[in-house]
Every structure is written in structure tokens, then in C-alpha cells.
Image 1: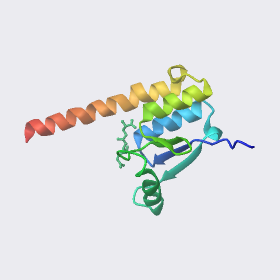
Image 2: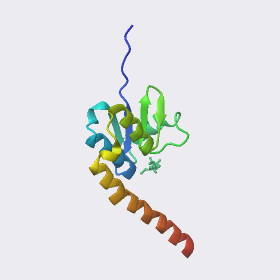
Image 3: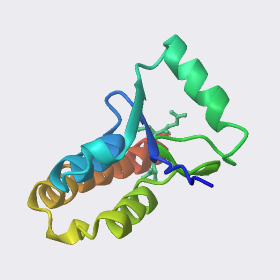
Image 4: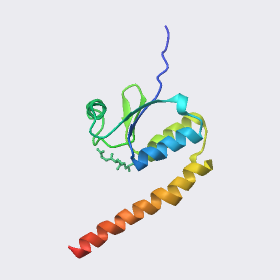
Length: 124
Ligand SMILES: N[C@@H](CCC(=O)N[C@@H](CS)C(=O)NCC(=O)O)C(=O)O
């Protein structure tokens, strides 16, 4: 009997900052060939297809998402990276481009976003 090897699938929304985090991990860890990437432009037919595929498997569809094994879906960028890291043995903490993106761009942007939400609430 032959056992087929499942290639994990990652689902990316264009211009999504959390999707870029996972993409950077894949690039810097040399894992681009180890996964199948399905990405879509918001508003496209591809988005409809991806959401139709994911929605029965996830309590809340968000991006990035991944199918780790046949029928096993998750959607949280840190969990996806942790899975990929376990598979590749490449610790994300040792990847400088990923680290610079998270600490120098993503976190400051999220902080500004939170601050903006608080300021709007205070002004309302
Ligand atoms: N904590 C999540 C945040 C993901 C997130 O908020 N992604 C946005 C896109 S940038 C999203 O999926 N929004 C809802 C949607 O597009 O349906 C993660 O790190 O994966």
C-alpha cells in the first residue's frame, strides 16, 4: 500500500500584513517549495473559492490560514509559523528579516492601530 505525502497549503490575502509575516518565514527558512500557496486579491472569484473551502473547517475565517494535513485547517499566523518551524527545524527567532519585520514594522503598526481605536473612542 502506498502512502501519499500531503503538501501543506497556505492561504494568503494580498496585502495582508499577517500573511506577509508567514511569507517571510517561508522565504527566509527556504520553505517556498515545501508548501502550496493559494493567494487571492480581495473581491476576486479566487477569494470566494478560498472562503467556501475554509468556512466549513474554521470557526472564524481569517488570513493567513493553512491546511496542515489533509482536512486539518488552522488560521493564526503564529500557529502556522510554529507548525512550519517544527517541520523545517528553522527557528523563527533566528531569522533576521522576519524579526525586523515583526519588531520594526508589524508591531509598531499594530500599536498605532490600537492607539487610533482608543483615540476615536475617547473622542466619540
Ligand atoms: N491574529 C491573526 C490576525 C489575522 C487578521 O486579522 N487577518 C485579517 C487580514 S490582514 C483578516 O483575516 N481579516 C478578516 C477577513 O479578511 O475575513 C493572525 O495573526 O493570523
